[in-house]
Length: 171
Image 1 (cartoon, helix red, strand yellow):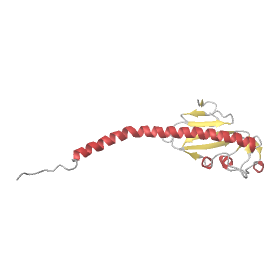
Image 2 (spheres, one colour; image 1 turned 90 degrees about the horizontal axis):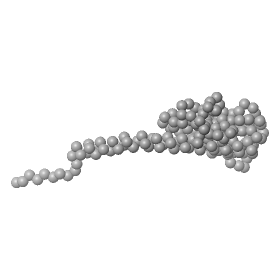
Image 3 (tube, one colour; image 1 turned 180 degrees about the vertical axis):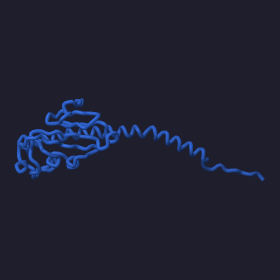
Image 4 (cartoon, one colour; image 1 turned 60 degrees about the vertical axis):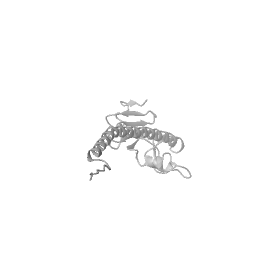
């Protein structure tokens, strides 16, 4: 009698080769996907800095008597029968892997009670800075703008009032 051997399925060597190929493809693709995510986070941060800058101009014109909001919650809180100047998620200070900090000017223009939303007083200037939550993972660059509306960027450190003028202009 003849011994009939059936070859159903895959051998262990074939399966190991397929797993190795998948591993190599993943090792090539993952860094590119992480760079794409960081690039997306940075684009979102630039948009958020622009949004806050525009909201500050709107606040100064309609609510702050020519002065700027002293905090992000003051921009996100809606005046009576209206909407906030920035979205509520941006008012928390973090969005898309970036943290945003608003530094208020030194001179008060209007006290809190005289602003339209009664959250904070208005001041003579501001600096909004966006920094990656985890540098090198959620983003690489730091962004900032002040009442001039000019967005500046740095690759090495957060931007504050002391180094705003030395930072590079965003093209």
